[in-house]
Image 1 (cartoon, rainbow, N blue to C red):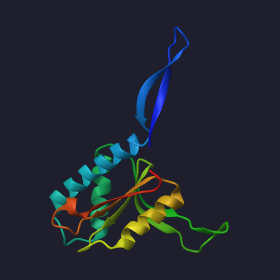
Image 2: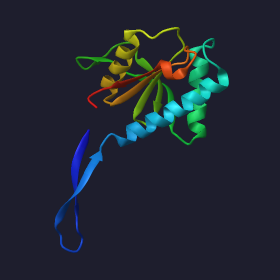
Image 3: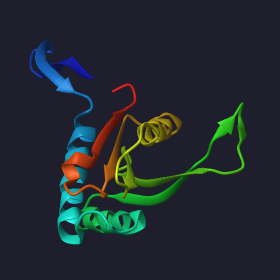
Length: 150
């Protein structure tokens, strides 16, 4: 969301229009870094042929190497009317505590993959998720951006 903000002049105490600020700038910067790291993983390990877990581990390593905080296989509880459902969901990666990444290594993505990450976003109250499909010859063809009230 882009909003207008003001700055207060320390001498006069008056507010002036300081322009626009993108409140989602952090998510956008992080997603660009994630995609850059994913391209590096794809370049080094190659395209289709490896398990999702291998790409996930390599991507987590690449993000950590770039000093970007990442958590792997994070449990997300599902509540029904305040009662936890027996099995929590598992996020592949939570990057910088704001962007959810779902790693795939399949021939083609299905609509359910985007729906899955949208569910994760809603349950965790986060705004941005990426589905990265390393099963494509070119990773750029396997990137899906999913937003929740962005």
